[in-house]
Structures are given as C-alpha cells and as structure tokens.
Image (cartoon, rainbow, N blue to C red; front, side, top):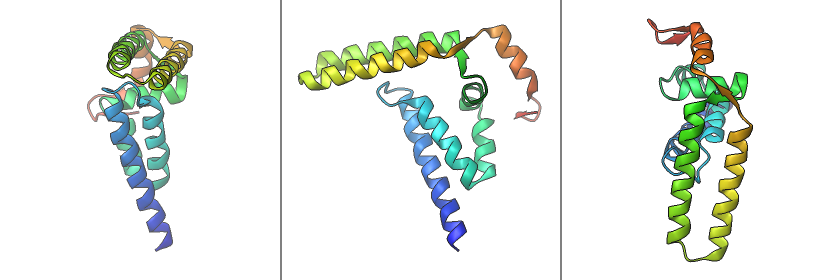
Length: 142
C-alpha cells in the first residue's frame, strides 16, 4: 500500500511538472527544460511506462534525451528560445508597472540566456547521427 502510494504521487508530480513545463513553452518565465527534466525524474521513480513515454514523446523526447546525455540543444532551438524569451519579457516589462517585478524579469531573462548560451549546440548533422538510435517504425529509441 505504502509503495503504491509513493509511485502514484511520483506519477502525479511528474504529470504536474510536465503540464507546467509545457505551459512554459509559451510563457518564458516558466523554466521548461528543468520542469521536463523534473518530470523525467518523477516518472523514472513512479512508472517506467510514463518515463518511456516521455523519452519517446515526439516533441519533448529528443530535447530531454539530448539535454540529459549531451547537455546540448539544436541551434534552431537556442535561437527560438532566445527570441521567444526576450520578446515575451520585453512585453511583460512594458506592461508591468512595478519596478521590482521588472528587475526580477530582467534577472530571470539574463539567467535563462546564460544557461542557454552555455549549453552545447548540436548541428542538424549531429542530431541525425544521434537519432540513428531512434527506431522510427516503432517510434522508440533503440
């Protein structure tokens, strides 16, 4: 009973983290990658089925896999992330009147930008080499 409660809590926490991370794709102040990694952590401890589903997800799977194994992202992902982050932050900074919130938004933007910059950058060629381990017929990593 106790073990299944813990497993169910891990699945619930993983799902909450996943949903929040997915929302973070559109709201740059929410840290998408750390939340997706947290989902992987919870799913790994709660359900192998959920963990495998996440790592094989057609949108999130490759990002999580590359981040965990290579601490790397595609150049296009970096560029898209920088642009979306700063466009959203500038809009938020203009709309918010509280100076403290503006400073916090700038600090978050700078921190996320530094983190993105420090990640290794994968080229399309490197991505293809990595994806050789992906079985497209069964939609699973080899």
